[in-house]
Picture 1 (cartoon, helix red, strand yellow):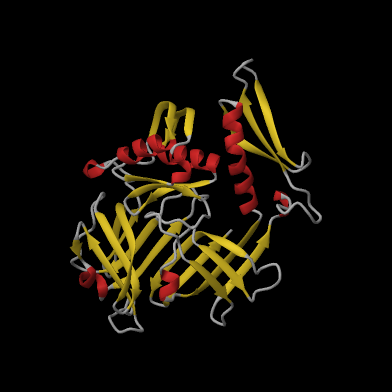
Picture 2: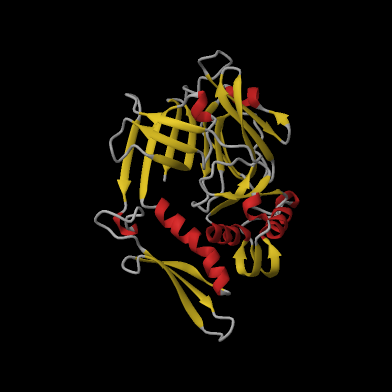
Amino acid sequence: MSDYVNTGVEAWKPNFYISADNENITEKIRKGLINITLTDYGGSSKQTDELRVAIVSETLKIPARGVKISLGLGFGNQIIDKGIYIVDGASSGGEPRVVDFTAKAAPMNASKGSPTVQSKKTRSWSDVTVSDIVATIASDNGLKPRVSKRFADNIITQLDQVGESDMHLMSRLATRFDAVSKPAGGYWIFLPRGAGESVSGAPLQHYTLTRRDNSSWGYSRNGQSGDSGGGGENPEPTYLIKYHDTATGQIKELRTGSGGDPVIEWPAVEPSLDAAKEAAPGLKGGAAKKEFSMTYTTPATLDLVSLTAECKVTTQGFGNEEDRDWTINTLSLTLAENGFSVRLSLE
């Protein structure tokens, strides 16, 4: 193996920064770097942001589980902070000796005293706010809570976690409010989906994508979700949420939308009619976002590297249907021998 990633401080060269438990290891791995891949998942993915690194080195120590990795990516001396990740897996092999490791945006194992977001737990919350729940989950996983003011004071009358991981529980709660819930940058965030709000509360940037000769893209429309605009060939779907009638104890149904096909059903039975009404916008919003999708792959630029999942994107010059406003559902940055590329999955 003789070809590695060509990086450096020259303005036109891709560059990176990596530290392990606050020790700068950038220069230790620069000459033998095979690839760095960072995948930033949006709220509908239910996956944790992931970093993968592969290096050729005879001396580099295999990172232990629980080691804190800080990453920056960019060009020349312009390096953009891409967050903190916790090592959850590593391997080595040869010839020559190659060290691979993966790291997640939240602890995925219990080593080094770190909790795990994937452990199954059983507990309940009654008459607490969304902010209270997020604070508990964040604290349990060694993170800080970050809750949008839109949701912070919403009262949850009953929320049961029965043999369920914190990650799955929070994804379920986020779906109720059409929110984004995930570990990111040392926080457990609970923010409006597609609202363009960052962990710090500052607005996320809005980016315009145009067609390039050296890019590839694909657009699709899923007719099964109906026409969220309410016109055209397909009617708006019916949205169905089951709930417990607190007066009779019976399970009843709340229906919104057109009243016809297709019927999109909420996956859980809500504890009351009020809770069902609260979940309705999330069910409708999530279904509408799944109706259209687009992928876009292109060489990286500094502006593209600065994007994150949930940023707003407008496509321009692709076609009458393809040109629209989107939210980034998944963003992948790959720095490898064949260049520095960005892949966006839009919804």
